[in-house]
Amino acid sequence: MALDLLITNGTFANGESNDVGIKGDRIVEVASQINAPAEIVYDANDCLVSPPFVDPHFHMDATLSLGNPRSNVSGTLLEGISLWGELRQKLTPEAVKERALKYCDWAVAQGILAIRTHVDIGDERLLALQVLNDVKHCVKPYLTLQLVAFPQNGLLRTNNGIKQIERAINLGADVVGGIPHFERTYEDGNRSVTHLCQLASQYGLPIDLHCDETDDPNSRHIEQLVKDTILFGLQGRATGSHLTSMHSMDNYYVSKLLPLMCEADVSVIANPLINITIQGRHDTYPKRRGLTQVPEMLNHGIRVGWGQDCVLDPWYSFGSADMLDVAHMGLHVAHMTSEEDINKCFKMITHSNAQIIGLENYGLKKGSTASLVVLDAANPHEAIRLRANRLLVVSSGKIVAQRDKSEVQLNLPERPKFTTFRHP
Ligand code: FE2
Image 1: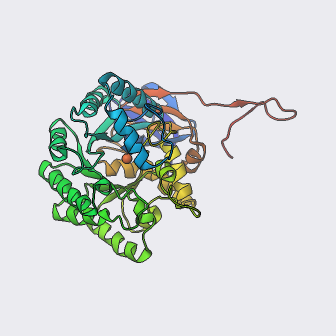
Image 2: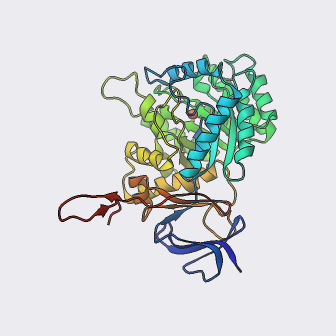
Image 3: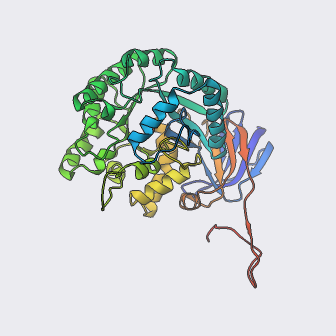
C-alpha cells in the first residue's frame, strides 16, 4: 500500500526504534522497518517520536492579555481574579478571537494538539464562550478544543450563576466547571460542588473543578467532589484541578483522602508553573511550594496530569505553550528526579492528559489518529531537560509545523565550529 507519509528511524519513549506509516488521517503501520512507497518520507534520524502533547487545563479567554488593563502586583490568585474582572467588561469578540487563534498557532508549533480550556461564564453576554465556540470549530481540523463552562466568581456568588451555566451548556460547552473555594462560605462551596455534579450527571458531561486552589489546609472540597462523584455516578469523568491545599494538609487526613479519591476514580490536574508562582504568597520563611501531592497520588494509582493553566495573562506573566516547560517545573517542585519519575512526567503530558480529557484513538499504534511530534532529543529525559525543539508536528496525517535543528556557531580556539546541547 502506498503511504501518504512515512516517518523513518524514530525512537519511541520506551526506547524502541520504529518507522511510522500514515495513510489519510490514520497510522496504518508501526514497525522497525517499513518498506512501502510514500508520497513524503521524513527521516527522524533517531530522534524521539511521541504522540502529541495535551494540555488538560488552560484559560484561553484570558491568554495573551498580560498588562491589560494593568499587571498583577501582589502575584496572588485573588488579585488575578479581580484584574480579570476588570478586563472581562471590556472584552470584544475580535480581540478574544485574535488572541485565541494566535495562542492556537503557538500550541500547534509546540506540538500541543488538544487543549481543555476553562471559559469564564460570569459575563451575562457569554461573549468569551461564544467566541471560543467559534474558534473551536475553526481549529478543529488540526487542534481539539474542549470548553469548560467556568463560573470564575463562583456558581452561587455570581448573579444568575446557575442559569448562566445552563445557558453555557446549551450553547455547546463540553465540560462542567466550578470553583468551590471561591464561594462566599465553605458550606456554599460544598453546595456548589453538589449542584455542579448533579448538572454534569443530568447533561451527561464530564466535570472539572478548580478545587481547593488555596494554601488553607482546611479547604477540603475535594472530599465533597469524591462523595458526589460516587453519588451521581461520575466515576472516571470527574477531575479535581489544582488541589493545592493538599500541600498543607496533615498526613493523617491525606492518608484517609487518597483511598477515597481512588474509590471515586477522580482524576487530578496539577499546574506547577502557576502554583509555584501564586501559592505561598502569605508565608514568611519557609515558603510553601503549593503543589499538590503528585508522587503520593501516582503511587496510589490516581490518574494525574500536568496542566499549563496560564500564559501571559492576569495570573502568570510567562509561558510559551510548552508542555515540556510544565513537566520541567513539575518534576523539580515535586522532587520527581529519578529516571522512572522523569518518564512518568513525560507520560503525564501525553498519555495521562489524553486519558483525563477523554481523547479517543490517541497514541502511536496501528489504527490511531495520525498525530505525532518529532523532538530534537534522544529520549523523554533529554526532551524535558532541553525543552527540545519540535522538529515536526503531524496532526491527523498532515504536517502542521516544521523546523530545522538548531546549532550554535562557535568561534573558539581548537574547539569545534558548532555545538548543540544534546548529550552524549
Ligand atoms: Fe485554572
